[in-house]
Amino acid sequence: MEAWLPRDFDFSSRSWYGKRNGGTAVPSKFPLRLGVNPMTKKNRSVHVCRECGFQTLKWLGRCPGCGRWNTMVEEASPPPGIREEASSMTEPMPVQEIPMEPVMRLRSGLEEFDRTLGGGLVPGSLVLIGGDPGIGKSTLVLQVLHRLALEGHVALYLSGEESPQQIKLRADRLGVAAENLFIVAGTCLEEFLQRLETLGPALAAVDSIQTLYTQSLASAPGSVGQVREVASRLMMLAKKSGVPVFIIGHVTKEGAIAGPKVLEHMVDTCLLYTSPSPRDLSTARMPSS
Image 1 (spheres, rainbow, N blue to C red):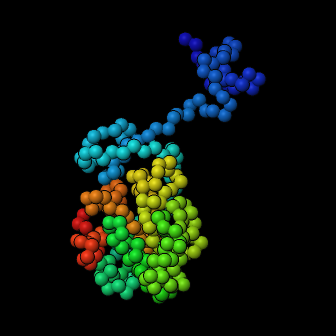
Image 2: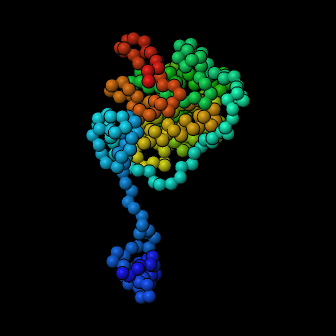
Image 3: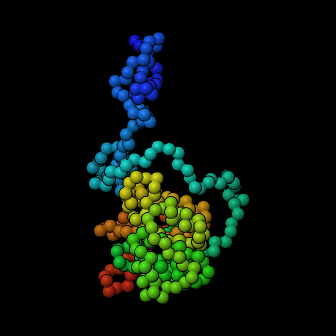
């Protein structure tokens, strides 16, 4: 049996050759172009469960992870590589020696909203607010940021669904005119993180999580992979910097938060904004997990 050495590229004929031990170079049966790695594999797609995030190479009618039916969606698999984590692990210490600092909650002045959050907004927390379209999620978050901005806190509101002019119309109707409240429109997560680093706000809001995307994934905004990755990056940002972040999310026809079920477990607080009828008052409540 003849052994073949690694292929070499012949610049004169612009083709790859394989060399036999002790013999002459023989043209390869599959000539390759310059700059193309012959060992590169074609990118594969994976099927991800919308409920639990279970991944498999083949489509399945029932998810092995959560047992739900017809929840598998196809997405492009991310490129291989080492992921750089933004957070760092602390050193082990005895539980008796852990220093305790008083938690200074940010109170918006809306008594019902502050009471739902347990007395106010905790620094470094990630709050998910879901509800039907037009029920008032964006209006509520804009009012909360306005009240906190009046107290001297710098707030940044990211809108992926409306232009700054549309938000200005709502702000004029609500009487929102705080100097420390900044508005930015866009859908790229990396650009939003740059704005956060430049401005250095005390709290931020994302409207909505389904419109935001990260450049590290090739799937479309709102897909299971994008929602999970964007939420994970925002969670690491909140924990590392101590900046509380509001996330506005859509709901399905059944009334549940749209996107992977793991999204509700990643956040610190999940508020579901509901209304029994259009004429009744809206209610913010915590769904049971």
